[in-house]
Image (cartoon, rainbow, N blue to C red; front, side, top):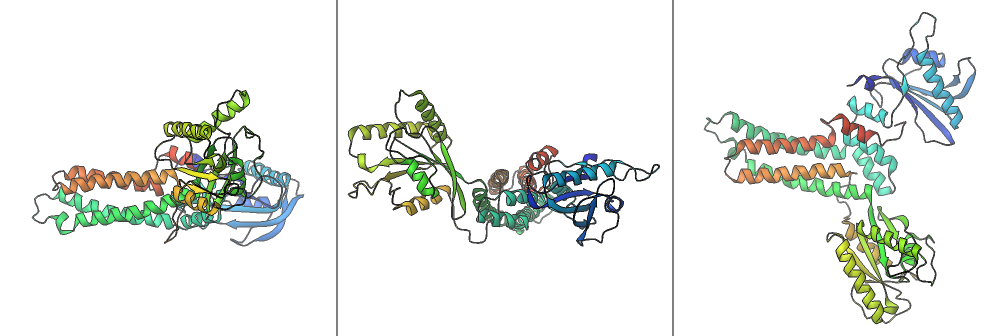
Length: 468
């Protein structure tokens, strides 16, 4: 590890602003002397002690609880001190400043400073220490940030599953099976003169097939977990006065967008995140699509097309009260043609016919019929959005996952597919087969951090909050 990773660190570990309780956290090696100098007494390990937190003159900054966790039995694997005080920003800053001041000054004129290198922690550095000291693997460390950032109950529970090691266990199980298969191939390469065919006797083909089946199961769970973490961007588009803003309000259950009978009321994007069965959906209402001479409206329409082009799913809203009007039909056809050009074919386009309350004699069978005004048909739309997202209720529990996890698992799948083709060729390219299996194992290792470049760790932990 770099020397910076062994420096003692300190930070405020609670959110900025006022609160009932605030925490200042210190982590490093051999903090016992520092704790005694800071608090005027030793602390019993893992036992909360109520006492004053004195300043340099011995006057209390605050009274609160102090906890000392000697390493390696701590979150970071190092000695950890936590000061739990009242959650005022000034109080916490004073406590943090006192820790930094005391660490850099000798207690006696001829004594060495208690912690000469104590510094402010970088974002995520406490959790990074836990990873570097083998208290967590990389997937578990990322799950901490995901648990903090969870926007739905389902996402929080899935992040908790990953933090407990559920995802890591699945990855380790895949890795162990892959290592066993590699061993068979390497043995065949190392002992070509042996009469025993290691691969055939050990059912290497069957092992590889079972490994691929297990991988697909893990990929499916990870995809669901990534959906819980990232959510899906849903754009509502259509002609003016089709009821886009009313639909946004109906889905959100609140009056977020202004609704009037005047065409072109919505001039810019309005976004709200809702959840359906725990899945976050980022719903975006856009300006009505039409030809306009209004400069402001033109800007709104341009932004609408930008949102449409980047959507994960598109709700194309139609107006039942105008479904037979030739001009309306022609304009809808023009919008549909533009959507076909701008939106990738993999993006689902959901056709929705609004204002069923105003036109009870519905003649269309294309898409979902609903009324944003009365709420009729909204459940069908919600179900269709979940289907478009690819959401399936988890049978065996879902763990949170990130895009990098999905990419790594896809790499493993590609390498195993290549290995399967090589194995089916009769084993004439065992060196290539061994290389494909090695690359697959490397991709799995990246998920848990069995090895990884410092720049990858820096990117991951830099997105954490300071006190974590």
